[in-house]
Image 1: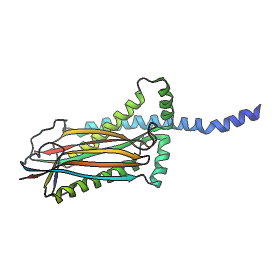
Image 2: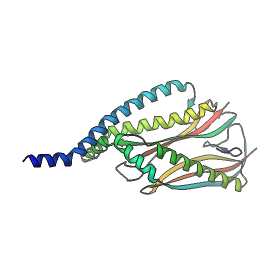
Image 3: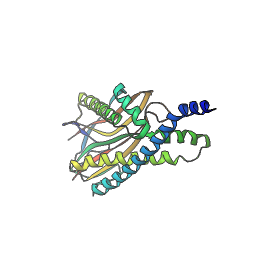
Image 4: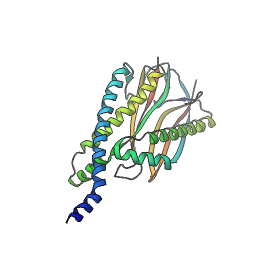
Length: 150
Length: 108
């Protein structure tokens, strides 16, 4: 009886450990990232970001910003289970929105660093890397637009 | 990204007038993931967050795609590319195609 419990522990142990590690690190990373985004967005100041296709200015140039994000182990399993029920994937929504904010921020920081006053005609695209469905290889979000100088 | 050809994803070039439309300029790059980066990303897949190795890899590849598009435009005699679009697609598991296209034009 004891042997069975032990062998069960050994076979399940690593999985549970990964779940725990994933949950803890993932939660901390998520919280830190949100705080970092808030701070950088506040520091960004007055670069105007629009999706307007036309703009006046003296000079324009393409700017991009991108990031590849992935789930932690815990959330990947949670999402897999969630798929059985269906409905809103709030975890996924949150991750994608954080990735978009990061991509837009990188693009805007690039534009600001080069002295631009605005980025117009911003487009956002995302693509899944690697194994479809599991988001194992991560998901890429790209933001691009035209930085404008006046 | 390039010194002489103006790149924009708007329909016009700010501060310039388009005198002639030449046509489509395009460039693509297919990049596979890298074993070293895969291992690092595999570990990152446990704790989550940004896969920085992949971000850099895709950024390099995208820069190459844009450079090829720029060369294409230059070969056609353009000095600017307008209405640029960028897209990414996973060709097979583990490889991504970065594609950049736009309209080559001559501005004054």
